[in-house]
Figure 1 (cartoon, rainbow over the protein chains, first blue to last red):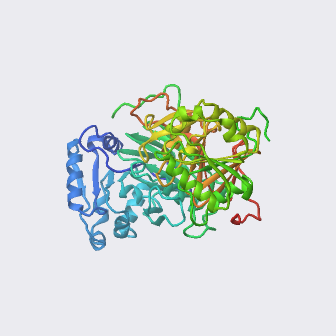
Figure 2 (tube, rainbow over the protein chains, first blue to last red):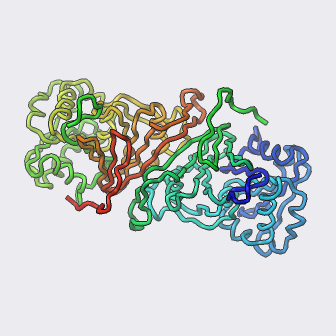
Length: 284
Length: 284
């Protein structure tokens, strides 16, 4: 486990999915999540509160995890903040080895969960136990301290195209965007990173995930790519100077596009060199 | 003038426009082109061969330049390669101070002009005289040695999303894409640069231009931004290894987004620092 001073210290793994992960065929990403959470002995809690139809979302994922051979699958059954407050967080989280936050609207997710005892205990378990936390789409976006809630795709990168909102804060130096190349979101992620170049932007494609380990490495799994936008070498950035409707300028952005099996060192912000024996990993 | 050994040596200026430049109101880019070509004494040759409707395009630009106060405006009247071959290149280019290649289809442009005496003499004048060469949209794309002729926007960066074709070759280390953020083309420009990281990718927005000077600097003019994709620091790139339908990975891409008035040193591949006295330039 990493030092407490590291903003991303976690006890186990995070599985951050760009949305639309395969649930019926190869299911590589869900297999990976289950394997990390203990395989067939995994005990999963589904958190569907981001969804417009949380009961439906809960049913889909319950069946999906059962199809993967799991027996211990439960659901945070709550459609309001009050219901989350009324839920027994200790009971819900006591014995689970994996938590899966499904998609929907990240603002709903955070407005329902943020600041509750459930969220506090979930973060505590993520940091101080091997609990595996997965999130897909809105469940991925909501993991960071600042999350993107709105932003035009393929428009000029300009000051006003992106709206940020506070997220659950599991990841503190990262900002996540999902459905990434499918929705042409590179421009808005660069804008978000330009707001605060301390943030590392992760743009995750559909049916694609990053697995973040407690040694500070990130590994890509799945069908698409993960685009990393590193603002730490930005030499010029006038986003604070220009008018709202003007385009802004930013120089020195580092960009990495990683595919299945490739890794990145978040702590040192550098791609991990591919070794001679690098091969596409076997399907779990 | 730069040394002959420099692939981008030119005698005057290139004005490379991302398309849809303002022709009726402020007309900043066209004012800039005219100013570089001699102001009211400029003698302009319009090359409309990329267009589906070259006569119409010629008429629009002829009227536009007349509206800007110019008296000496002529047109390469040719709708076929044979007509270009039959034209008297010496006469057409003898006294002009600026050539403007209008938009349309860059493959038509190059298939009609490429290898003709007109193209040879035009390049000779661009390199060895102060002639100002401007191109908009297809006329911009066609200036480089390799040009993008097809590519999906906002799709996965993958090996097959971009088709390149040989261009007129005025710029030899640069590849140009136009209508850039309007059409979400960052992904395809990164792909093109990954084919050969020697190339410097320039993604130019609509109503936006880069002016390249014979000292190797590039300056942005206009309403949008210019995105520079520099592959020279790429540390990992497996575009040659993956299957056609697989996404590829690339690490270490440098990205700069520049707006009106900002400059970049093409020779040394570095943004030119903004001085204290930097202000948005006055309208010419």
